[in-house]
Length: 166
Image 1 (spheres, rainbow, N blue to C red):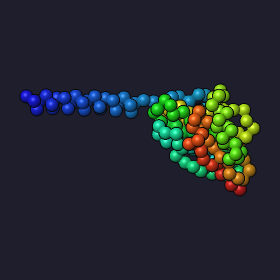
Image 2 (cartoon, rainbow, N blue to C red):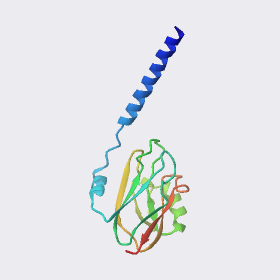
Image 3 (cartoon, helix red, strand yellow):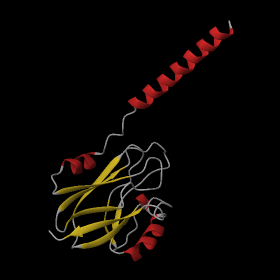
Image 4 (tube, rainbow, N blue to C red):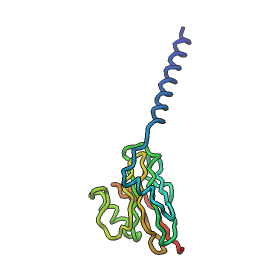
């Protein structure tokens, strides 16, 4: 009798796990806003994707590159994230010395974007399961730092946008 109870309990646990996995697999990503849909549909010379590490304060790439003067779609890909605390963006600034100032100022600003002339471009915040984008013209050849300006993230989430001669 004991073996039969354990077998039934094991089947029950497996059923619960299967249902939980099926429900998780069916979860859909939030629908992008009409503005974001238009940006993803816009023709560009290059698309640069910056994926966030799953449920972490870390980008999966450190360097992204495109030709100077190119029309670029910069994508913040937060689609692997499920934690509600992991909200990210990509903010490109002019120099490394701008990172600390912009990162700290962002904490008290609406949408975490301060009014700072060092900001060259930025994606909107991407919540868990979302992708956001901005379309812009690549700056002159050089290296431009990028960071996440969600409060507390800039110290861990940084990379470099490299603009190369066409």
